[in-house]
Length: 161
Image (cartoon, rainbow, N blue to C red):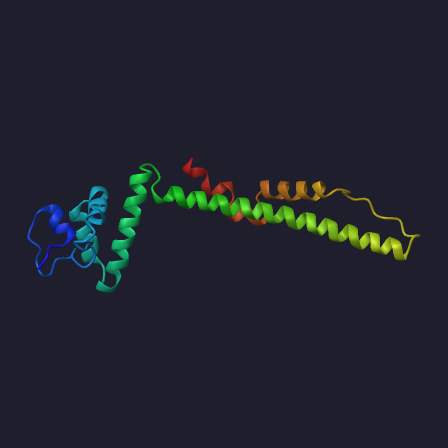
């Protein structure tokens, strides 16, 4: 029987009931080395033993992913990536809101022009006049935390900085 990556790394005999062997195969030694560097073999074994057998493979995958993230970013680990993705969502929501405001303005002005062509005696209403007016209103709403992007806005990620 070949030893698993964990037993090879730890230089010990691999028992038939080794907790590591299903999740750290011998052909991928860097997987265990990465997890061991962050968590330690004793902690990994304890975590895996506390879980039901059907959840252990997923836990080993998560430990490996989180250990890789922690090695790349020792301060934030995978939370740094999560924060970055939340910021991208916030930026995309802001861009979408601006585009929707501009579309609403253009649709309203197009409808107003169409109305004026049909009824030239009606005077057009002057509210904002420019699409920038509506975009500024949306940005002000988002800064106050009332807008749709406040769900993932700056208040969510500021505690990381």
